[in-house]
Image (cartoon, rainbow, N blue to C red):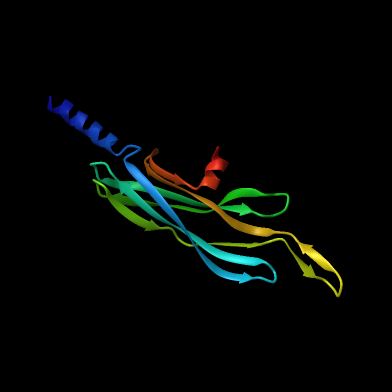
Length: 161
C-alpha cells in the first residue's frame, strides 16, 4: 500500500508543474548604440527581461529557460528570418505564485536602410538596404522536453505557423 501511495504522490508532484501553471512574461528592451543619419546606418542592442511565475504548489528546480532573438536579413532578394542569438539557462522558481526575473545578454543588430548617396556633382547612387534588423523573440520554460510555459512575439508567431 505504501508503495502505491508513494508512486501516486510522485506522479501528482511530477504533473503539478504542468503547462498552465507557469507563466512567462517577456519585455523586449532596446538601446540605440549609434546612428549615422546621412548614411541611414543603425546599430542597436536588444535583450529580453523575462519573468517566470510559478503558480503551482511545487517548486520548479532545474528547469531550463530557452530564449532566442530573431533577425530579419535585409539583403535584397534574400529576405529571411534567422536566429541571431539564442541561449539557455537552468533556473529554479519557488512555488505558490513566486517569480524569477532574468535578463538575457545584449545582442547587437546593425543595418542600413535604403538611401541615396551623391556620387558626383549631379548624380546619385541608390544604396540598398542591408544588415540584420531585430525581428522578434521566442522564450520557453522546459522540464526535460515538456514545455511548461512559453512567450512568443507576434512577428515570430506568424513565422512559426
